[in-house]
Length: 117
Image (cartoon, rainbow, N blue to C red; front, side, top):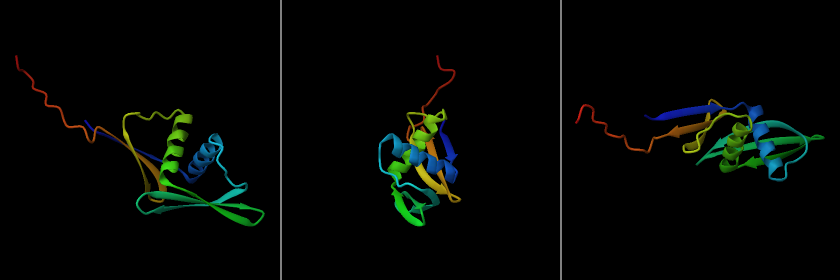
């Protein structure tokens, strides 16, 4: 049996995940309001947030590994069950960040013989 699970995040959830992770790690994040979120898909997914304060905009680029870790942490902090032993990959589907979780895709099928004594 193989399992595929997709969790699709809203832009607000992605921004919350990134800011929460940065706060926990004491990483710098500019003050202001996040005014836009864009994804770039090129050998992975990169998020770019525009943060505006007093009319001045700062761009924050979040690489795929950090974005994926932020989304996994976001799920964990909200008690969304995630399998530990599973492959997790980040995609953008219909403009939304999507965490795709696969289990047993690389595991060969077991042969079960019934009725053998």
